[in-house]
Structures are given as C-alpha cells and as structure tokens.
Length: 269
Image 1 (cartoon, one colour):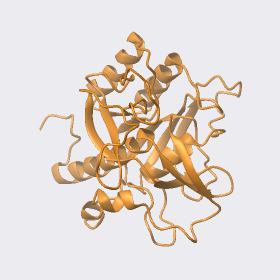
Image 2 (cartoon, one colour):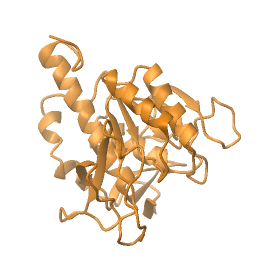
Image 3 (cartoon, rainbow, N blue to C red):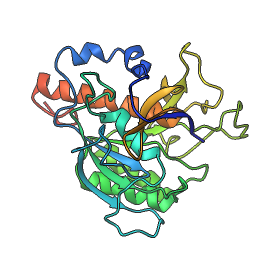
C-alpha cells in the first residue's frame, strides 16, 4: 500500500517537490498554462479543504464511502485523497508551485473510509459521479485485485465522453510488498491510463506493479505533498502519487489544446 515516509508541521525546512522539476512542467508553466478552467475528478478518500494547498478548489463532492457519514461529508479522515489532490492542483505557497496544475479545480468523489478502504461499488459510483459532473480528467489512485463489470463500464463510458481516467498501477510489486499477482483494477482496463512509479534515479520502484497494462511511469518515491489537519505536509511513496502527476500533466495539456485549437480534444474539427 502507499506509505507515509515522514510528516512536517510546515514547509520551512523542506525543499520543493523534485518530481515537478523532473517532469519539466516549467515548459508549460512558462507559457502560462496552469490548469485554468480544468476540473479533475478525484476518486479517493475525500479532501481537507481547509488545507492551505487546497482552499477554494472544490466544485462539488459526494461521499460514496461506507464511513457512516452523510453523503455531503467529503472530509478526508485518512490522508490519501488530500495528498493526491494537492499533487494535482495544490496552490502556490510562498511563490512556489507544489501542484502540477495550481489553477485547476476538483470534483471530490469520496469512496474510501478512514482506514483507506473502499468497495468496487463505491469506486464505480464515484467514477460515474465525476462523469455526471462534467470533469475534464478523472484520477483514481485506488484499486482492487478484483474486477467488476460495472466498474469497467464506468471507465469505458468516461473515456467515450472524452474524459481520460488516470489510475495508479498498484503497489503489489515483488519487492517490499511481495504480492504474487501484479494486476489491479481499474488500472488494467484497456480504456484507463495506467501509471507506475519510478524513483529519483529513474528506476522502476520495487513496489510498483509491472505488467503489460502500464502506460506511463512518473516519480513515486519521496514525493512532497499536503497532509491533513493544520496545514501539515508529508513525504510519501506509492503509485498513488505518481498517477496525479500524470493527471496534472493532462490538465495542462488539455488547457493548451483548447487554447491552440479553440475546441475540446474529443470534438471534431
């Protein structure tokens, strides 16, 4: 599973997120692309909307999890969704970027409880909710070794409507975690964009699932991001944190495409 390596009370003694430099997002930032107008559906454990990285980000939200709270309670009682969301669109802090697309917004589709657990039905409902709310991209840093026809249909429907579904490949690699089968869903669907993790030396990490479904890799170790409660921060690792870097990249690229061609990518010329 994804791991927290360390937590920090603030940013005073932390360097910037190296992954943003490695992926050379500055090439798009320097042209003025920051995710403006883009909405990302975050299928995860909710969000700490009071965090300085994530204030004023939410378009809408719904709680599909089994945490026993009301459907409008999208608070993150775990940490995962907050950390993922900040990587996608974390605000500028002290004139530095910490999220890939800092001007993007999010639709919060909460499907995991305080223990970071969810169900196939909850993930499916969360994906459908994002589609119904007209997001531009869906990030699913969640998954299961079990498959679901309904979940696959939800992903297929999203992609048919021009909404890329970016999914973490999973952390069941034959390294630290020792699982036998390195296939996770919805990452393994033909229609999803499956993202594995690399380290600072550009090697595939031991924990990252490796299979024929992986489409991209991105940094997934020692990733600096937001941590819930009182504006804390954390260094984390896992394919969960590689996927939002790709989601953020797609937000920048889609923004650029719309500006360059005056249409959406899924529309005919």
